[in-house]
Length: 202
Image 1: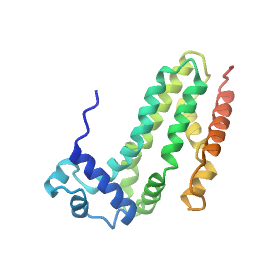
Image 2: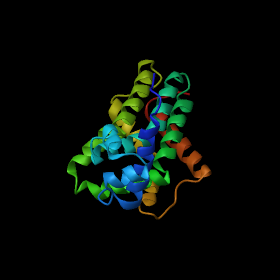
Image 3: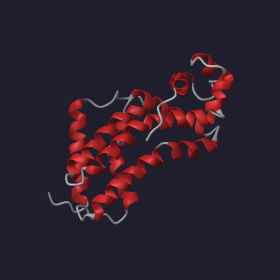
Image 4: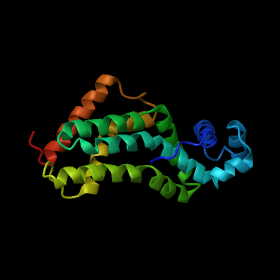
């Protein structure tokens, strides 16, 4: 059972998210985050031992909703269209959110100054998402619903197809996200293409 969220910890994460997306990683101090939360510096360091640790936690928080959705669709094994569509919907809502786009830009901008940050962030966010995705596909594969030779590669391909050029243009500020019609069309196309590519016979 998941522990109830500590209010002070959540206040720190909320303040850190705003600070990082507004001022960048390098432009934010732990002292400023403590003041914005507001909590004492000892309280801040009691929850997060370093700024890198806090930044990783911010990214991890952005993935929690998606991870929850992936867990919830584990039982929808008899309807992979519905299961994959639910995953796709949650992933798009996460990946295309303004805050997520800002954080993604921030990670890229700061990577050259903190090479170790990339690995830290990857283990906190994308890696668990891929594990959950692969777990769901493994169940479908085990039941013979899909035929998947490489679970990890197929998991990556599914999520990557939901981003592609449109997401890249959003990162560049050329677009402002996906409208409802565009989202539904993208999900339908990707799910259909993915299932056909893995031997699904509706």
